Length: 138
Image (cartoon, rainbow, N blue to C red; front, side):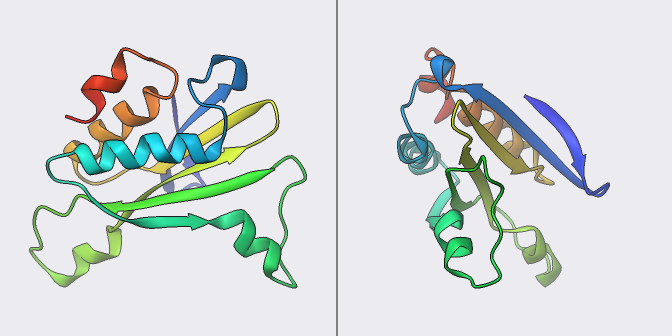
């Protein structure tokens, strides 16, 4: 998993998984795994799923890179504290999953909370590591 700065300001974690090395066959199966992780977590709460590819395809001005075959988000929240209204700007969290034909690209924005980053990192790594799946929900 790589950590980069997207557009020189957004800390993003990205995992590229060749399909031959992935435990799951498609974007929907990966999202189902992530949903199970969210629902099994003691703090995280599921909000929903968003089909980014379908949304952008439906827009007259929508543009999608030619190698992106599917792109969906799972949306959830780890909010354990609400100390002020501004903290809502960094919530909820999402993990994006894209199908690029020969591989999946899974990405998420770094959270300002170690609990959230540790959980999301474990959930994403479990896409390729069977042994991590059981510990990922903790």
